[in-house]
Length: 101
View 1 (cartoon, rainbow, N blue to C red):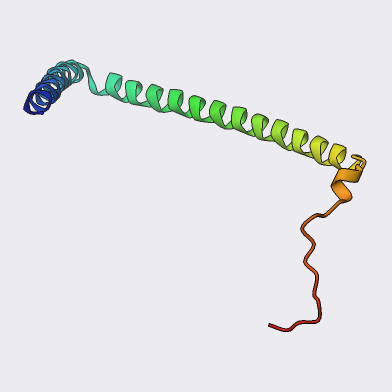
View 2 (view 1 turned 120 degrees about the vertical axis):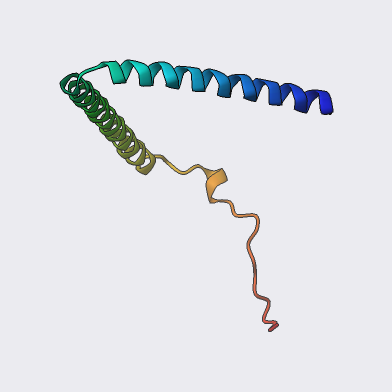
């Protein structure tokens, strides 16, 4: 058990170390950029995320409309089904024999 926890801890430490390394690299890169280029980068990122969000919303709405159309079709078909004799037999009828509980 200790071996597993020590291995997991080593993996966590490596991930944290790599994250700190990449954060320093990105921070150095952003500090070397001018103010206008940083604003341009942020604006382009927001614009990209906005397009992705709008695209996801459109796809979701289209899928919901398809599901609702299918549901309407299924409900319409269920209304046309003919009952068979096995549907009308109710073997679990509860009779009241005049007794009161």
